[in-house]
Image 1 (cartoon, rainbow, N blue to C red):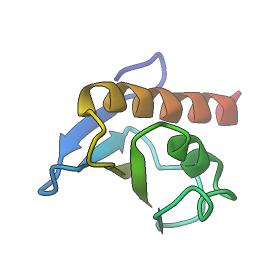
Image 2 (cartoon, rainbow, N blue to C red):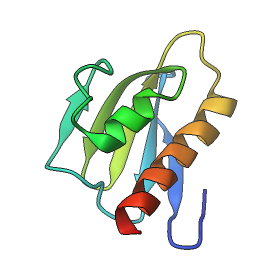
Image 3 (cartoon, one colour):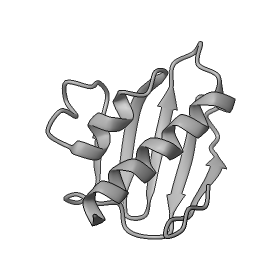
Image 4 (cartoon, one colour):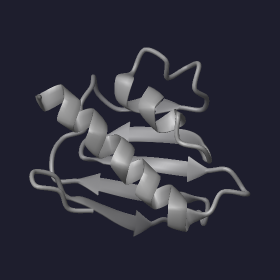
Length: 96
């Protein structure tokens, strides 16, 4: 996904249920962090927004990328679009 001010490249991982969303900037927030449910991510605005996407099971946020692990029944085609939109929306709100 490429927006006016944001580029997000999606890369596969060895795990077919995980994908790496690489940003053209540092992921906002404090340091590297991982979450395995929405409750744990409640205090992290970006992670909370990503857990609101149906099919997101776990997150790893590091440097300039976010690894998203999906539920078994989620479909990558729609999930990728929804995750990219959630990332873009959160970063737009932070910069605006």
